Length: 462
Image (cartoon, rainbow, N blue to C red; front, side, top):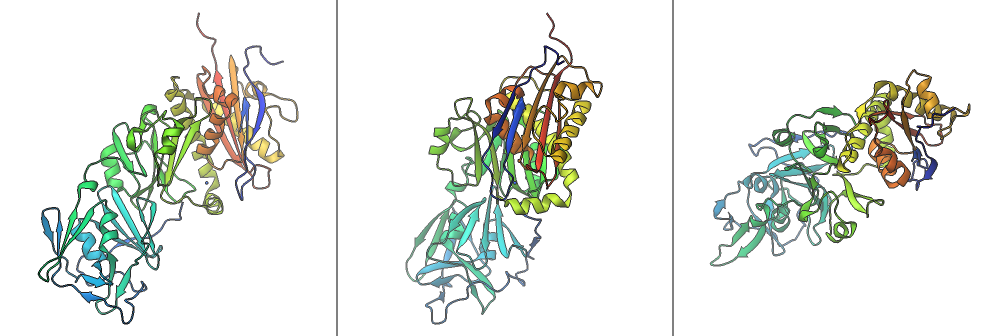
């Protein structure tokens, strides 16, 4: 017979199915209740002997392109000099991409796998792709509506319209003509104010942005407390020593490619941050690739943000997961623990401690549900959460159990629990310990199964 002190709620919440994914469910006793493959990049030599490869749109035959040898370029008060000529095409000024990028102090990186070139300067990464009229600024897709990159075969150089090359970094461009010598004045006022932009986050006074160098991240945040593999084609640098500043930063090829935080200290542009009203976030007009997560049981306030330069599809994530499923499942266990603690702390509750034996019981039950294709707090033999703990010699004063199925990582499993009132309550109970177990079986109904075991060993002192 179950102890009278046992707390558990027996409801199952069905969530909307993702395309190509099993129907997620969330259950609690509470029951509750998706990266690119690594690409290669090489920095082009500074000699100018090798340039970006051919294949871009070449200068149209019979066009009115001409060299503008007299054009002078100024960046604020400093004149800059390019080692390749400036071109005019249909009245528009084009600059050699590599030479211009380097004159701005940007790193110019050719990515063979993506057939693209990346210009990185301070907190901004601009990526132009060969044969595309679109480019990205810190992961935000932009369009060259009436222009495109072109290739000058005479000197084997790639050119970009100055407007897009400069404005991508937040600069202002002004054309000043006169006496046969034109002047292009570039003002950097927009790029130097230090304000947060889309696809950036500040956590505990330290800033992370898409395209940031790994060395810049480490200089600001220090070395990560843990490095986790992921199904996003990158590694998570996890900072979890202080749950008020908890953040996971995705690194691929020495660059930041994503981040996640549900800590109480995260801030976004415009003064928005943890606890911001949903209407205020929606009115801010974000153009980036952020996902904003709101708590429906706390006035729809913002409680987490997830950002990727590119969100991979479900099929791609599954392919990466299958490369090392057991490693990723154990990673999901501990990430679920961290994300839950950050949520507790943000809601004024103390962090729970990790309980290894409870984690083993949680994992065993996740496997049992996957193997026997069911989802319930009572197993087919009639055993409840307390029975499963006591069978392993764990005698608790209070037990809460959260279940989730169909979510393919820890972040989305916790999101589902937050969005379910009973599961959310279970995560915020006055418990002492937590153990988490995640399992996957492709032939089961939900594929992924998550189990949280909250336990309190001693009754509260009087």
